[in-house]
Image (cartoon, rainbow, N blue to C red; front, side):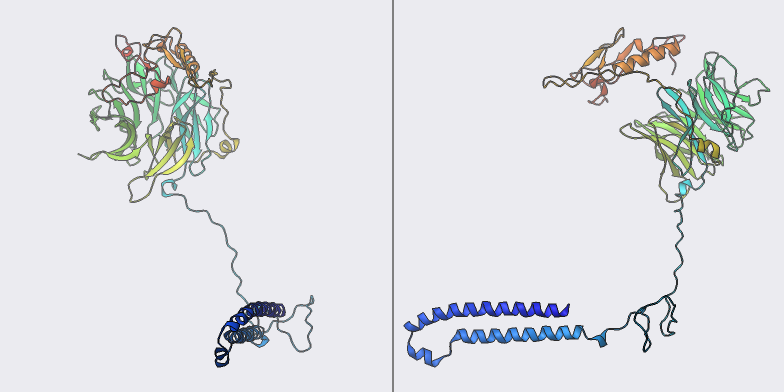
Amino acid sequence: MWLGLILTVLSGVGLMLAAATKRSNRARTTSVVTEKRADPIDKRLGEDPLKLQNRRLSLAIIGMVVIVIAAVLWATDPTRIAPRPNSLPQDAGSSLILNSTPQATSASVAALPELPTPIPTNAPPPAALRVGGSLAYVVREQGQTDIWAVNVNTRTPIRILNDITDERDPAWNSDGTRLAFASKQDGNWELYTVDLNAPEAVSRITYDLSFQANPTWSNDSLWLAYESYQGENLDIYAVRVDGSEAPLRLTEYATPDFAPAWAPDGRQIAFVSWHEGNQDIYILDLNTRETRNVTGTPERNEDNPAWSPDGRALAYSARDAGRDKIFVQSLEANAAPELIGAGRTPAWSPDGSTITYAIDATDRSQTYLYAAPYGREGGIATELAAVPYGASAPVWTDRPLPPALVNSGGLDLAVREPLFVEQAQTYTSNTDAPYRLQSLPDVQAPRAYLSDQVNDSFNALREQVQQATGVDVLGTLDDAWWDLSRLPEPGEERRSWHMTGRAFSITRNAILGFPAPIEI
């Protein structure tokens, strides 16, 4: 290798000398012509400057060659190259060819220490999720509302109930072995319970032609409190799970009372009421039957109360400044509500260190279940699972889902056929919009039109609502399509989905009258 390098250097030097000689000859020819015109005395007085330049260049090149050769000899000197630490020592007369017989290692060569085999470890879960357990929540898909569940830290949800007639309002009992829920699988909204170790064994709890929903367990798992519409009013009731006693009516206000939450001490129930003209959260004392307003905020409507495991605070959601937000209200005297962040339908972790809730993506493509630390410094909200848009009502137990249920992959969607087929025609002419407005048959509205992209879904929804209620609720609308020249009302944004033909407004006056045809 080094010999090749030396030859390359010498070849380069030769080329440089040849080029210099060529330039010198050209210069000499020019100099001769010049000398013929110069004074002969100048020629005798001084040496030719081109010869002097060539002599200096030759000496410089020779010096460079000497330096390169010296550097090569120094670099290839075998006495300056130290043996490698893992080289095998060679005794006199030994062969340079290794054989299969192990040779003793010289004591002067230190053996390298053997490094331990690395063992992979899982990163610890975020602080908000260390309690573990599982969540149940509600998803509406293909016009069917089902209950889903997911083990915390797995992000692999499964459908655990799939009756075609809807299930909603999941609630774990105290040890997480049974789930209460509301369903109309028998033709009316009633309360049921299910043991997830045997999900096919569903037990019906209530038997009434009225509406029952939003169950909540007592701390001993012997009772369920719930909302029920009886006697033309929505009130809070309680019933023994074993059915040994008739339901008890707990509230008797003329205004709606709903969304009960049983306290950990078993002697209080939080609920939502319009008792004072605004939607607030109240607490009913079961010992005295007295109630007290714990929010009292005319500027927003609270909903979905949830007790902290220690019974000292209530988490709830409220519509505030046009957004769904999560608050925590301490039950200490004169305590102000604490804003947790955007979201809805909150629930506590079993140890009270975390609050879980649902939050929708801004583009309405997805809903996320989040868990936010509570009651300690630091920590950020952690995503539990990405679920279909509109999912809600997460509830948390410290018991994981039964392995057999998880391994089964859950249940399939009971609805097989699409609810509707949107038949939209696209227009490609430069003078036309890509879609057009279609009239809504037999609908009473100022402008009974919707976009060709959504009119079929509206007609299907109208038919389903009429079948379920017996009333053509969507046959009369306050608004459908808005003309682009329509001016916004005070406080109303200029942009609106009504102007695209993709929104409608139900008749607000339908809630008036006695009896009111629609109740909200």
